[in-house]
Length: 122
Image 1 (cartoon, one colour):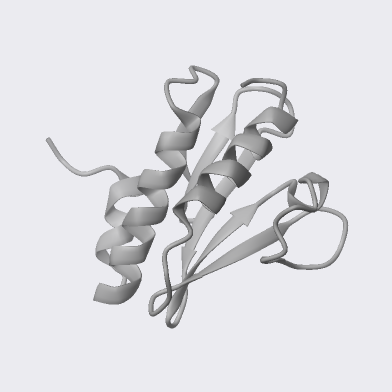
Image 2: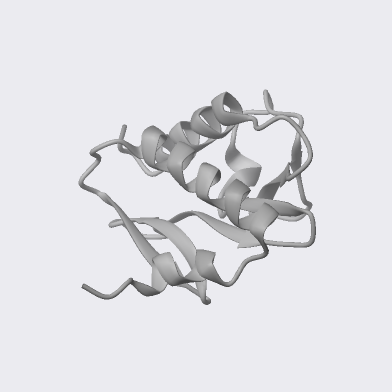
């Protein structure tokens, strides 16, 4: 069986970014659980999770130089409890997950759960 476009994205990253991106993917998967309304897909050539409803983009992963960005499409609507979210404007916010720092698994799971809840499914 061939790899999906989703899985192939990780192969193109440098080793440190790939390791972190795969850990982010696993934390997102844990937070999403078996929710049948959330699907893994590729959007704009990046791994993404979407909700089946209107405005369904939940989050996506984007590798960068020395970190991985976990982007939340409705991040401006997330609770202000996570001070590490960056960004301005009406919608998108992102969390930089640095390759040389402690991995924030619990923060990621919490943010993803909150993002999924914005779409009306838990």
